[in-house]
Image (cartoon, rainbow, N blue to C red; front, top):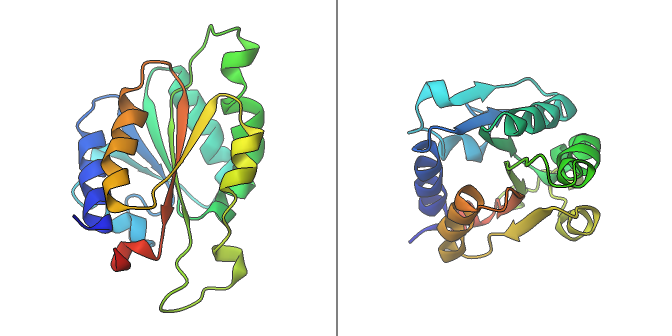
Length: 178
């Protein structure tokens, strides 16, 4: 069981659910290592977006309100920082502000950028897992440290019945190392 293979298996599993749609940068076109995990996902399940992270997270919340389960791909934590307003003040707070009347189950896929074999500099390797965990009251955050963590985490995120969103944090270096 390899890290990359488990990610690919998990994305294929998610894609089988008719409510799931993948949105983000490099989901339908080449661009990141995450793109390669989506190669077997049908094109109609993928919505390619420009580099507009706050808009993407706003769309994620809107789709979740309609009953879709968006898998919103932000290849690095550093990119997801540009969407923190929508994440913390909207997606996370909708269940609270509506007294549980609205559920916004989404899967946010992000990563800690790879440093090997080439260090991409510090704007690509941030790990904001702990800070965002403290900011969110209704969103769970799961780190994928081992290959055996991957499928159960994505399965939980999809099948949970509490309507909560899940941020799943991948490690770029592990795509080729584990």
